Amino acid sequence: MIFPGDASPRGRHAGAYDPSTSMGRRVFKAALILIALLILSWPFIEPFMLETEYATLTSADLPAGVGQLRIVYAADIHKGGLMTAGRVADVISHINAANADLVLLGGDYADDSDSAIAFFRSMPAIHSRYGVYAVLGNHDRTIPENNLNTLRAAMLSAGVTPLVNAVSRVHIGVNDIFIAGIDDVDNGHPNLTGVAGQVSASDFVIFLCHSPAVIPDALKAADRAGSQSWFDLGLFGHTHGGQIALLGPMLKEDGVPDEYTAGWFRHNRINMLVSRGVGTSGLPVRLFCAPQIHLITVNTAK
Image 1 (tube, rainbow, N blue to C red):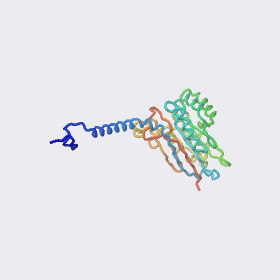
Image 2 (spheres, rainbow, N blue to C red):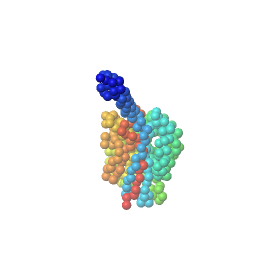
Image 3 (tube, rainbow, N blue to C red):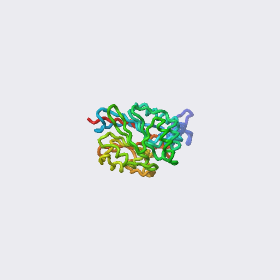
Image 4 (cartoon, rainbow, N blue to C red):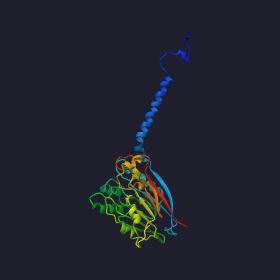
């Protein structure tokens, strides 16, 4: 006999509605949907997650009178689309907050030479103790060729020294260091030999080039006396670190050896960095490849 008040399983009719089981299933399904949405949306979220990478190096060529040099490096901002003027201002706020001695920029400021000119004409001011220096990327060196002069003028007006096959001597007290930069290797007219020949291997030299495809040739180039290892620190961009890290090798069409896709490398006494960059190119997505700027502290070797 089954009594009306019997709450035991025997008191439930076969196939009766079980609210606790139904609620559990709904929660489980909702969790699965939320996880799926997060997985699908994450590549569009990660491009907004700007990181600052900190690195400390020593160099025998950095003059003892300098002691320490704080360098901020940023590449591949790619203003346009989701990289709005507000986001550019935020990136520059991050740069200025580092209170750097030098700020160095690695090219690809927008999508083409016209928008690169507009970028520098509207860019918030960048502050550093000894100046802001920059090279150009393949997106900055699109036609017409005469845009190069206009772009250089816009950079200078923004307080940025363009390095297009040029070397700048930076005075720090009674000491000098050198920043060397070449034109883009894909769309420009780089003169690596001429730039390397302007410095000495005993100088402290920072070498800037947008694309790390130049690294093998740069390591073979020689200073004014014919000596290799003519630079101490090399800074590059262009690759975006693969942008979608899991598919990076399959998507690469940049002519850069796989070993130089991202990160730090050392050859002999030369430290080199390939940055993952700030912005995106093509699809506005990143996956396991967050955007970054760099604060590099170089100390004199004791």
